[in-house]
Image (tube, rainbow, N blue to C red; front, side):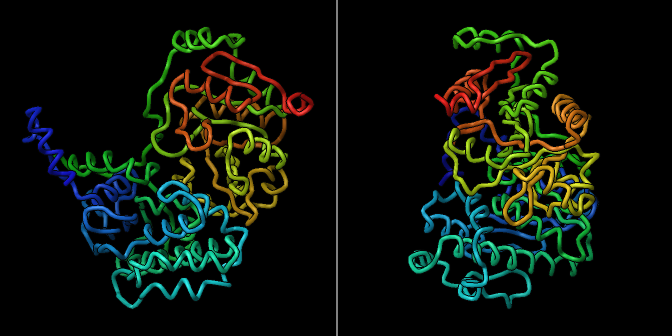
Length: 451
């Protein structure tokens, strides 16, 4: 239906003969493989549904992709996780990340066997989802059990089923690297489990892993077919629009906010952070994908977990969701486990890892209840401005980490324009806004509480 309508519309525009169809999962795996930098690797796509399938396993080698096995619908890990998201009272296809956060508070063993029994794992190539069309199963489970225990069981089963088959294909192909895409790989805790497969040395997840990334994947797949393409590690995801100082100043003038031009915006941001202020940051090109990677971010010190509650209230977010750290890459080995294996993935906040005692002591606000964090690792070549903020903060505190959370109100997209940033700053009643080379200061948290 969609393809037919698209072809009809393009025919009206005289473009029908230029339309090339790329299979949904091939687009996913192309985005992962060609941006991974791995010459030879297992490439995996897992999501809800697309092109009649719910996933696929490919071998990427020498710039070419070879299908190993498709995963036919309805055998879908995406559907499996979407249903428990809905049963627990959250919005499916939007709030699955909340289940990951909630799961850390539950006991997976209480319901593990019950949930695990929904899968047939005897097929050598892919899992089979039994009773896939039973919409009442999750509802009955939620009615009789604690939500955190339900979430924990589903998270553990998701991890176990996915990694069982990924590990099987790793052994059958003899590869040491895995590249991943598809909405299921938005599950950062599962990605950690993939890296923990004994034969796997490193993992890459395409940063816009969901359906927002299939356009890029389709273009990469077609280019590879037409011209040939060698995998190269993607450097950054700053692919969106940017705004110069003139556009920003016009928006500030129209807003009526008091502001000043900064001679050194990074140093001014650090001065505010040293006062334990929460600083919203808007600078450079917007990020492509679901993660704010410093250019549309809210930054604050990771030393006081109490700030998490304050910020959740301001932004209307769920209280059990963890906040993620942004850290200097040169200090990563002292903070996190298996940095070598996740180095590329962690540039884009697509994987969790266990935290060291130093990290837990220095930055407790960035460590989840299960002792993990989802870091963004930054070096000077990737984002010089954010790197400078972190470097100056480290020089003055000895701590190479801040909290980085997306700059948006709950249920809204990450801010894109200066006008978006100003509105979110006001609605969130945040403490400071560093926007381009301009600085806006709001009320302090203690003043707001006193009022």
